[in-house]
Amino acid sequence: RPWVGPAGIEALRAFTAAGLNRGSANWRNLLCCEPENGNLEATRAEARAEGLLDPIEACAPRLRAEMAHTTQIVTAGAEAARRLIPGVTGGILDFRGNVVDVPAGIPSPEMPARKIVPTVNPAFTLRSPRFRTAFYGDIARALRHFRGTLDWTAPRAWHRPSIGQLRAFFAQP
Image 1 (spheres, rainbow, N blue to C red):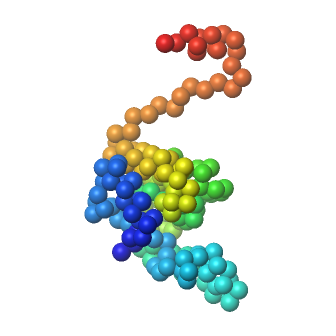
Image 2 (spheres, helix red, strand yellow):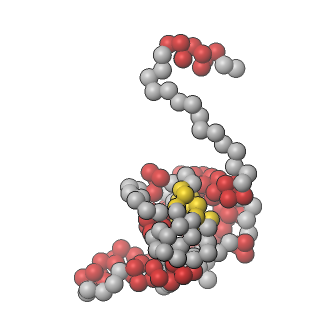
Image 3 (cartoon, helix red, strand yellow):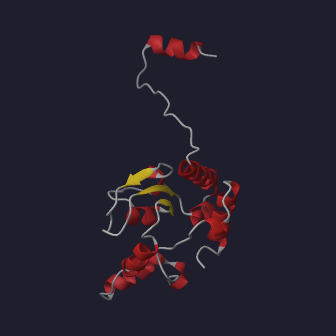
């Protein structure tokens, strides 16, 4: 069963806080097995050095098959987001928390159109607790969006506001 260690417990807490129990969601990992010593990057570097297939690439067909009918996804961490959202660059903190509409057929023909909300990996929140609130908020926002109960309007923002705009803003109650 995926997501059973400390990071899985943190993820389960975030989903429970947002009103979802473990049995109501499909939990998936990019990898079928845990890398030696839990160090994915070292395992990937070793595979490249030995001319072997990258472990994530080796597991990609299995992941696509498991997700062939999934239309609402929360990705945990940048690597998972990069595998499912075309054109994603930068770190997870640059694009986390937003709903991304991905058309059908990307990254492979059998994939349906889907909505993806990337967030930080729960293991990251264990190492950097200051991001726990953002993680919990991303999960809650994703579930509200998927349920159709997210009621949010982008705020009006000004870059270099005029004196009149500032006066009107500060005059509001």
